[in-house]
Image 1 (cartoon, rainbow, N blue to C red):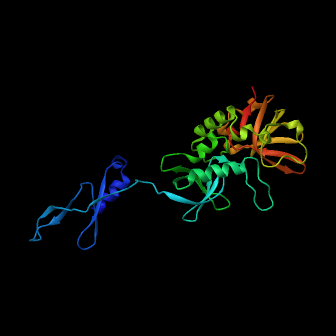
Image 2: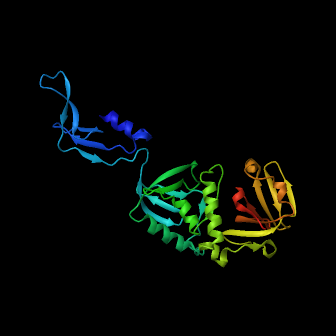
Image 3: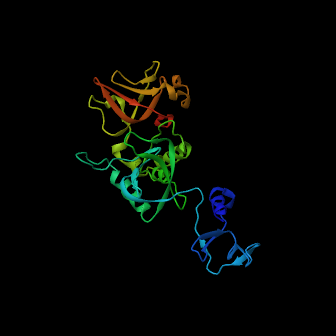
Length: 287
């Protein structure tokens, strides 16, 4: 009977089968796909037959999935599960909340409240990424509820998160980008906030700009090295694409002379500003 249970847990075609559980007189548990019957021996102890069981009950089995309760919500894209694991949502980024001496980003509190309400009394399962953890030892994953709600995707669709793809984790990229385009067009959440409006490259100063940023300008030169391709916007700012991920992008030479928007975080080195572009979803061509 236990072999039957293992099969039911593993075979997708048996997902909807009803499984019955009961205990025999010795306290051992038994399982079957037939209500109230199990194999037993007759009084002589030789031939097996089917014996009725009065107290068999249906058990709830979700094949192939482990569901967990969320113990704590840190912000809009990071939670802790009941087993102590910290989970960082893949494919998205929500604004930061206030912590230590850092002020909250616009929209950070809203994303955390939405996520807290969504996961209250809910259980989630994980689809862990190609790279299982980040440098902070957080598990990288997409989260799904028992109702099959894709939490990462819903945050983007509500305008509470921006798409942030880190190759080689490319799961659900098309769905995430489509949801972001729709949220942006509808001016939902962060897309209606002036703090996240695209900034012309010509307005950048040496100080740069804190947090996740949108910059728009004309690509005036393309410079290539063995490890990276640089889209130069000015003497003070360039966007960098790592050569190992170039196959994900269209021909980068096509960006030359075009006005485009790049999205990400600014890095400063020797008074020069740059932005690492990991995926083409972080580049938008202006019409």
